Image 1 (cartoon, one colour):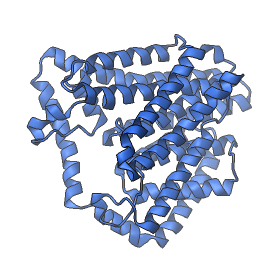
Image 2: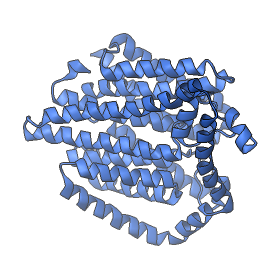
Image 3: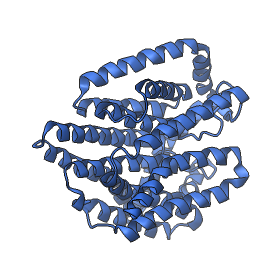
Image 4: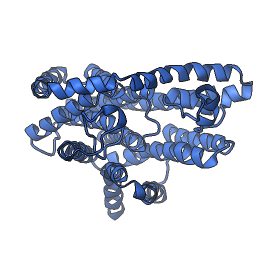
Length: 407
């Protein structure tokens, strides 16, 4: 059908478009506003197209997404800086959440639709890093000229980690669109960049995500052998670039960076202290949703936004908001688990397919929960890709089990 083709191509373009726009905005900051508006219009257009032509079916997941979106919108309206809260909070969170039903529909239309875009995303980011080292572009303040990131944002390592999980899943399902050796090189190079970035949140999140994938995959032997090959490749590449890696570790151990880490610890204490002095309504519903800087000024002496997602959600939307935030992940888990249980009575081909997607979903969920300790709610590209992958995996499971009417 024409609408299926339009919809699938539109949604498939979202990961690649987001990463290209991130890079463009970093290289050309003067165009940040028009590019941001176009990005917003492109994704909102996809959401509206989906609702108009397919409708938002009354599943528990969809009902919750609508309820949670309305919940944070109402809280946003009571903040002192409506623009800040609306754009950096409500819009970013809501758009990423609606990628779940979009992803589900995409998975029901096409298998492995998100695979090629994620491979291209990794390829684009690696090309960016290569060109940046050659032309010495985009070094950040604390990196002391040891590693040039070009137009890549702070979320690039965790986005690569997501792509690695998707590719791992494709290996086990034997659905790679390109030659194995090409994809393996991309994975090794991508994981090397994650290590080289020395982003502890991304490294830990990928590690935990892979552990959960290994625990739930039906192909543990082949997964282990593949990981061994990747580790060997990382060792070879790492030994050849040991001086660069050492300089990166040294750059990340500066006094300024340690001060940032100390502030992340302090912010947790300050949030608890602030809520301890608040009334019951503020404890339940929070204060200054997604505009934490105005609250933290009295603690840090400046309007510093909270970095840890759990702190940001707790202070801004209260205990209820944090519970709802966590409930989303529970819904994603239970939805995928029910599909896995249904697959156990099916033949091996269907069962193995569903189990692999279930393993990918759990890996993405744990990756996200761990990453939120470091902070990731403000990274719209990362959150959009995360929920697209999860949604698409659920949709594929439904299609394989002939349950597409349930959406």
